[in-house]
Length: 309
Image (cartoon, rainbow, N blue to C red; front, side, top):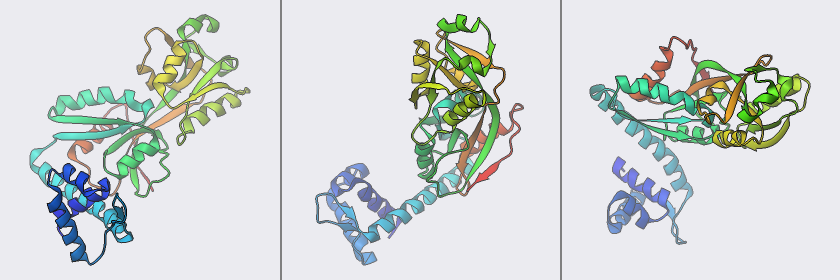
C-alpha cells in the first residue's frame, strides 16, 4: 500500500461513498472501487461495512484512518520542509485567532508583508476548543489567544509564546458619558449600577469569570444582562445603549466610531494574558517560524516560551 492508495482510502473514509470520493479526487468511480478492493485484499481485512447506503468504517478501518491521517500529515510536512529549503518564505500561513485577539493581527501582518511579499494568509476565527481542534488536524499552524489556552481535548503538547499583558477597560455607550462626569478613568464601584454584557462561550469562560470576580472583590454583584460569544455583537449592543462591558484594551481597535467610549479603570488589577500557541513536536513552516520570530524581536515584547502538556 503506497501513499497514493492511502489518499484514496482516506478520501472514501471522509466522504462515506466511493462516488463522492471519486469526484473529490477528480477520477472515475470504477478505478477507485478497484483500488479499494486491492487495498483490502493486500491487507487481508475489510475496511468498510457495505451493508448500508453509506460506507461505515470497520474497527480495522477506523485504526487505518487514524494512523493514515497522521502518516499523510507527516509526509506532506516533510515535502514542505524540503521545498522550503530552496524556496524560502512563501505560500500560505494559516493562523487561528480568538475573536478578542483579532485586533493584534493587522499590524503584524502588514510588517510581515513588507519583508515577505510572496507570503499569503488564511485567518480562522473561533473559540479555544474549535481552534485547538484545527491545530491538532494541522488545518492551522498557529493560534493567537488569551491565556491560559482552554482546549480541554488536547492530546499533543504545545508551545506558548507569551505576549505583553493587556489591561482591561470599561466600554460604555458614548451617550452615557455624562453619567461618569465626562471622565477618562473610573473606579470599579462606578459600574455597580450598570447593566453589564460579558464575553463568554460554552467552553471559554475565564475572561467572564475574571470580570465577575473583580466586581465582587470591589463589593458588588455585577448586573449581567447578556452573555455573548461575539465581541462585535457586544460592541454593537453597547453602542445602542444597552449596557457596558469590560474588555481587554486591545479589543478597542475594533472601534464603533464615536458610539462607544473607553474608560480606564483606576483600581482594577485585571490583566489579560495573550500568547501564540503551536504544536510542540510538529514541523513548523518557515513562514510560521518567521511570524513567531517577529514577536520575539519586538522591543515591546520580552517573552519566555512555555510548554503546555
